[in-house]
Image 1: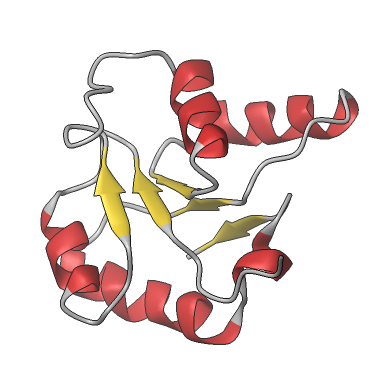
Image 2 (image 1 turned 135 degrees about the vertical axis):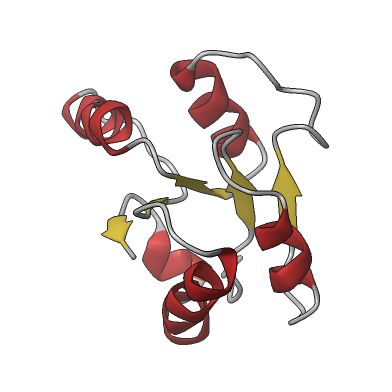
Length: 115
């Protein structure tokens, strides 16, 4: 079954205001706190996102570039990883909307993108 809209899972380092701003625009977003995943390591966080078919959103570039490469080399699939520089949540929404409005969930699979 094809999936059109990207659904996001926000890492615990992401301002939760981002979730509210994206939900107000009609997107499905879950935070680490809402998922009961606070304090889990990066591997567990990405595994959780994969188990829920969510695209992972983080500011943690160094660790998640390595995890994306590990998934690739071991033949594992994920539903996308988006890495963003830290900035104002409203600016992050502006940047994210470019991806969310132009890329389908199916196209996001196994992709690593930067905003």
